[in-house]
Length: 327
Image 1 (spheres, rainbow, N blue to C red):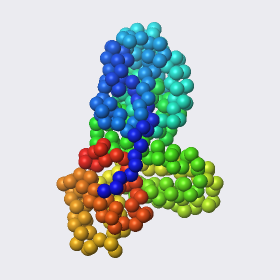
Image 2: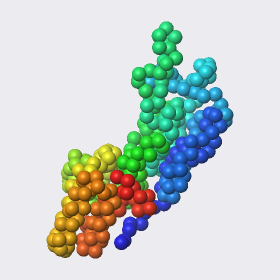
Image 3: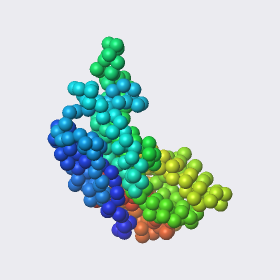
Image 4: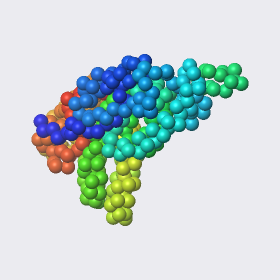
């Protein structure tokens, strides 16, 4: 069965400790085998450790976020006189603006520099009875916040959350899609390049966001009203936002049935009915997504037309990642 040619060197940023580098405050690391042994086969990782980069040693005193969750300071956990807020912010802002070539970023959870979600922020008001305790409102690591702010379309995730099959699949899909955009459209943004790109991703969009599918379809249909550059600038944020919505089982089934419709004149009715039954077994959670996708791709490759064969939905990333087997 033919497979798309997938890149194996997509540039992705990552917290250095996740790759196994001993850069944590206690001299240890947080190596992820998923990242080093699986994703390392398709991503060219660029490791960062902001705390080491600003001159904190290994090992070093631990630090934490204090004060306003939206604009926290970064001080020593045991010695508040150790205040690294300004050097960490300066490094984070400068580095975050230099990451335009990245197609994704994997952070480490709970870090005051690299935590992406629900990082504890501590009360530093000595007159408050809850002084020294975490605030009700959590925050985001200073470096992670700068990366997200300066690269709003960049797919980002925490290493721990990648253990969730659906979140892992969604993150990897977005990384591959952004890389595809940069290769197919961004290097030479023409109306034709955009239309071709959108045509290949129509069913991927359908599976992730019906609203995004319609909005982007309307935008491309009216492409003559804008310059290619303006059209691409408007298209990409909507495209990445649509893909950021994890595809539901219901939407997958709807998408598979639409694709199956392209085989009604070339594949016998009995076979199509068998495929409908397999899709329904996926809907019920009896089989993983890999089963209906693999079967339908088999018939699309042999009996479909060029339009449906080119759909990214049927082959979005390397088969070896096994992502469809787990959702």
